[in-house]
Each structure stands twice: as structure tokens, then as C-alpha cells.
Amino acid sequence: MSNQQVLKFNGSRIKNIHHLAHLIDSCKDKHLVFEFEDNYIAVLEREAATAASSCILKDYGIPSERSSDMVEPYVDLWGDNQAIDQDFGESPVSNLEIGIDGLLWA
Image 1 (tube, rainbow, N blue to C red):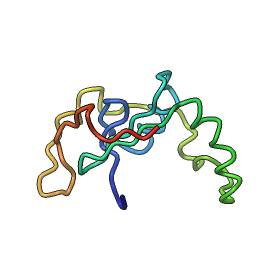
Image 2 (cartoon, rainbow, N blue to C red; image 1 turned 120 degrees about the horizontal axis):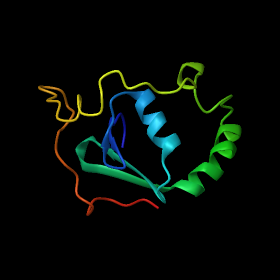
Image 3 (cartoon, rainbow, N blue to C red; image 1 turned 60 degrees about the horizontal axis):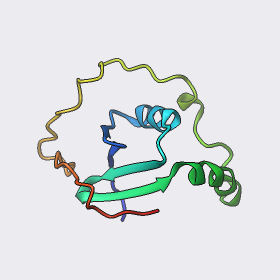
Image 4 (cartoon, rainbow, N blue to C red; image 1 turned 90 degrees about the vertical axis):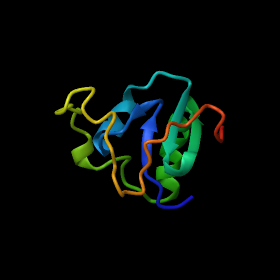
């Protein structure tokens, strides 16, 4: 897997990186499900991912988990339904729905 765009998080289409950060921060589900283009799915246990985050940052010398512009609260400027059925035209991004029988990483 390389250079893959996240299309959905826990079934919600991603509008932008700030939206993704908001969805992750507000998630109370047991799993974090990332759906990528090319029908690729990555699933993390939320509590394990949260617990491992500070160690990963430290091990790789990353000073903070996100940039300062991502710390501000997310404001949805387009409303909840604007970007849901967006057609991506000639872009490599797919509108294809991914079923639950995809790859499962836990």
C-alpha cells in the first residue's frame, strides 16, 4: 500500500484532513475503520491505537500528533450532505462502496 487516499472513516466519507481528525477524535466505537481507494481497508482497535500513539510519536521523533491548524475545532462549512455523492471524474478516487468482507487489520 502506497499513496492511497482515505475515502471513508467508520462509514463516513472524508471531506478533508480536518474532518478526518474530527471524526477520529469524536469516535467512541471499538474500532477505527479506514477505507482507502482500491478497496483497501485498515481496522485498528481504538483503545490500542490511542495507547500506542505517544510511543510511536516518541520512537520516530515526531514532536506532536498534529499541526497547530488541526488543533482548532472542526467547522463543517458545507453541511453534512454536500460531499457525500461527489463524482470524482477522471481522478483515481473511486465512488465504489466497500463491503465488510474486505481486509481486516486488528
